[in-house]
Length: 196
Ligand code: NI
Image (cartoon, rainbow, N blue to C red; front, side, top):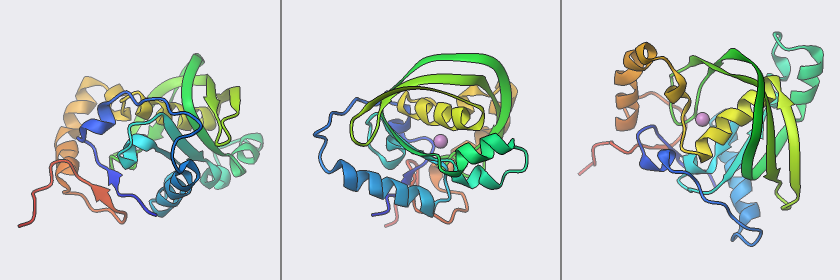
């Protein structure tokens, strides 16, 4: 099943999401649907609040970066099969220098901006079989995880921009919340005018 993706402006994107446990109903089906939804929208990560569920769950598939000429050979190999499910994730620490990466978000179509984040993240999470992991990631993989983790904390990448940048994209964000945006995947817009 393909879910509509919740657009910027919806309060669910601002809520701190709740933990789930191993008997969460139909988790496998939900995960399948989330991957399907993400691939339909050509995304590399998707968090549950983006499909209108305020739970601490996000998925990542970094394989589209396999072709990225700017990555090292080692990093390209890592991303080529980096497909993961993160449940009840908690960031333990972020370290290293901040670097800029041009981020986008399926909930904020047509907006891409350089965002500064630290290079390395250590994260504790459960996988789809509710096996606990504590792992450290860096580079592009860390970046995707940091962006998705923010979603389950109610944070969006646009929050991290300078006051000037925020002002410059304000109109665009308002339009997105109203559905005034050209996209090729299904979305749910909080401020769309109701059709009579
Ligand atoms: Ni996002």
